[in-house]
Amino acid sequence: MRVTNAPSTTAVVCINGGQGGLVEGTWSASLELLVERLAPSRPAIRFAEVRYRIKSWRRLDWCIEDAREAVAQAGGERTLLVGFSMGGAVGIGAADAETVEGLVGLAPWIPDRLPVDTLVGRRFDVIHGSLDRWLPGIPGVSTASSRRGFDRIQALGVPGSYTLIRGAVHPIALRAPSGTPVPFPRASRWAELLGTRIDAFANATTA
Image 1 (tube, rainbow, N blue to C red):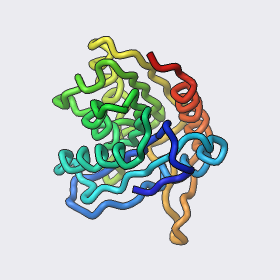
Image 2: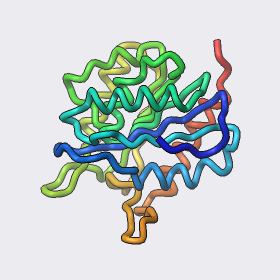
Image 3: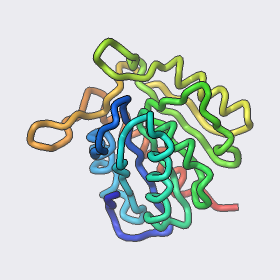
């Protein structure tokens, strides 16, 4: 885990995507770009990015354990999870951690057999690119898939929203050979919408 901003009672824990192969975890260029754009103007919120031990949906249980540990180490009394791609499924698995109040899924992968009752009593918002889909050799999550998962979660009485970004694809950014994240078209819209959800969470009053 790496953190941005000082310790705070309010934390945003950002959870990476993954793949089928059992490979060592890496930092997400998409999440890194979003944190770089959003954290400086929100110094009262501590941002944490998760790097899995193994970033594979074949070890989803390990990834969920890593996310839970990140929530604990982030130290927030109130926590918002942000899950990109496979991080949506991981975030759902970790959402019942005591301090978690909600999850924002960015192009979230929500398998049909994944238990989602962990979100009961919390909030679930989805932001998804309208052009996202799986293509041969190109990873992606279809909007039909995320919408099906969102509707299944809504049926449990979980409040939330579903927003499409017209013209956006699956990645928000890719990493250049220099190591810096390079934004895809519509990256600014992703940041704007996520920033709105983070602000709503930070400004919400606790019961």
